[in-house]
Image (cartoon, rainbow, N blue to C red):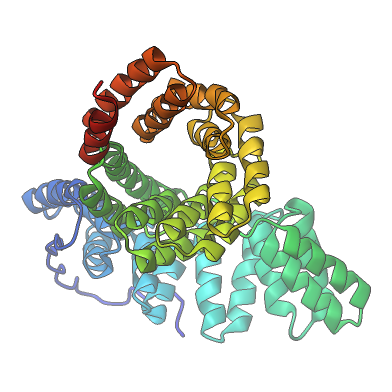
Length: 455
């Protein structure tokens, strides 16, 4: 693979055409950004900055072919610019064109020899292409400029591990001295120790590897790419906020479309996956809820809300055994989550484990004494046993906080007061419950209250 600078042509090649952005399937916020950037570039197509900024927007939204055309055009307009050479290398690599990417990154490094991001990207391409000696040379030069780069030390150690494990160990240990939680370096060091028959040391590194944060990280600064990531994140956040507002208003189908647009912009936006678990659960689509749950926990296994939302979707689908496990997973992360305790309790009741359910209702109230659902169910359980006076304080607390269940909670409290002979309070509570039922479009419950209490 050729990686040296090659500008031997005596004539300037023609400028590549300015690409058209692809709008199909894009969220409106993305279409606006693409349209504005294209308009500026089209108005001044020999302005490298205007064309390059259009290319950056294309690259931010993974339109790699168009981005490549823009950056090639910029290379001809401003051949001494590191920015366009580097971004061309990134775009070419994203298309799997390793040779072209390596040439562009090598040219970028010629312009800025100490640039760590360009050196690491180039070394990765060379290593993947089997050109390990060239990759090693690039990394060693990078370490001359940045001797405490954990990313470069790790890569050099990984590169040497197969042939020179003793030397690899030194680089990997140095990487971990700079960044003790570097998960990939821990694993590579364990393998290097094992190659040197240092089994105890290898086991210790594997233990640390299991404890390390599994979230993927770059481990080196990359300002040009960070700026593109920022553009994408801001767009994704704007669409996510719209989806959240729609979900809060109960517009579930529109919320689903918004969250799916977020994932078109940024497939790794964990909270969009988490919220889609809830949305698909409400829509009665457990298969899609499961898919987004799996994607969410793959990105962040420690997000309790993903497990909780999945538990709720499984409960709706009457898959109670699986729902129990999902709620327990949420509680393993945060055992003070009153919603998870309460929903686990209702699930356990469905599984016939009444005593265990009551314990979790009480745990929910320990964490949130005003929790309406836990108060309601404990009050209900007393009422079902005819213990009406014991039921009253729980049910009164249940209706004190507005919730989707307030009308039902009030209906039961009215029945309890009637059973205790307090007809005035029963009628008062029934009227309030009927108002709640009507305001929440619970027509059948409103009619039932009216028929039974004539409030």
